[in-house]
Length: 264
Image 1 (cartoon, helix red, strand yellow):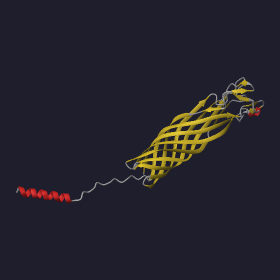
Image 2: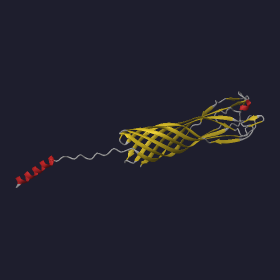
Image 3: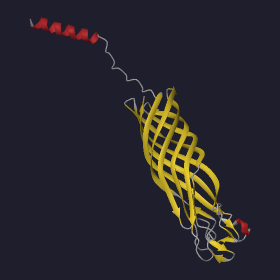
Image 4: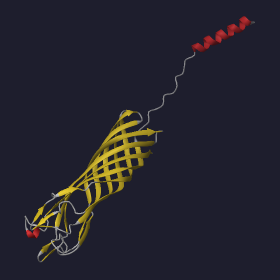
């Protein structure tokens, strides 16, 4: 009886050994193709230079002699919140191309008294009542192409570049006071708020979680060029006085964010 049982066991073991072993299923690599939308938080640095020229131009060259240079920095840093929307195309096993738009807001604000380049001598006497002012950057946006390489099936390194927009507000003010005042004819308080258009480049890393969630760290540099803005033209010129001056403002930004998006 025992011998029979042993025979059955040995026969079963041999039969089991002959059966093919089924390999465990291999998980499919996640697809990066599709539309996604997300939110971001981070920091925006405003790299701004202000240069002043043409102070009281009616009095001619040499009437104003600067004693503290003709310009200076108006840099600032602020927290930024934003959102983004894009689409990806995975056109090779390890390459992803895309198009993305984003919109953000931050309160970059730098004030100066006096404004850079307004300290000096006017007809040989020191100016008093110098103008105060500020540069404020608020909302921004961009539309960028992206190209990335998958260092792992769920991790993308990418670069981006395209067009960018930045809202910039310039303010200058001064009061009329006795003496060799900067504003001799009228008090002034003026604000100009153009939307600047420039270019942007950047890059980052993005990681896919669960096939639908995308977490990222992103950096962008944007350059909006140099533009000129006359101040105090309205009511700034009269008999024996000229309150006008011209600001030359160069605007650049550095933006670093982290974001979370959902891929549809």
